[in-house]
Length: 319
Image 1 (tube, rainbow, N blue to C red):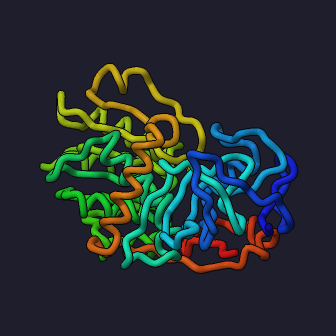
Image 2: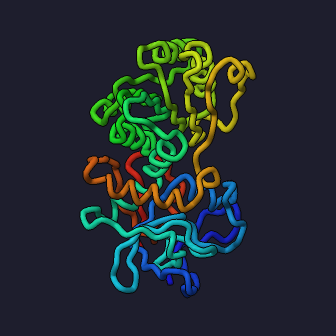
């Protein structure tokens, strides 16, 4: 079969032939229709991601949309190594497949699953969001952050605060549910002052979803410790690190506040819970009017497309 193939760590995948998979007793054989290019997929392919198998050669792609032999459309996640979603066919444990609603098309399902799941699972499984609370989405101008704004509103957040470097993209988020927008400026003191205003507001901040980390995370945490409501927990959920992989965190921030610092992703949430979150996301996508920009790319163009910076629209490979 034709597939994208990674031959060694650090190498871009090539388009070529790969052995056709055979499904085991507990697996589903899937004819792939669409597979999105995500940061997780690129990181796993490079061997840098903590969930990488280290097995070469292999087909990249952690999830996708396809059809079972009986014609049922499904979304699937975490195919059995060395098979991935960026191929004509793959095999996946039956428990990792989700039937798709008839009204949800293949392109939207493939594009929205990974970025949408990050926000849905973080809000439901980690933050345990309660309707009426206030949510700050740090890094809301990317696909994941933009969906997190929409999902927070759908789940009943009374107020959603969105941050980002792109001022035009921040402005557009107002139509998707953002009540307040904060540009991520380089001046740390100015940034902390903006977060201070939100922590001191009547609603305060109950939940932070952080896709950035780095300096902005430091400023949010310090502002939360200084100006947050006493004894009222702020559930701070680290999801991504586009602004840096490390932060400097004074111990006093945690000693002097009720901030609850945690992460959300593969490992911190059990895979069955992640699959359930994706299923719930799909059921809500059309009723909730969730928006994500996406475009299709032939899988045969994977070599020249792989290095593309992952911004909107989201890239979805089709065999």
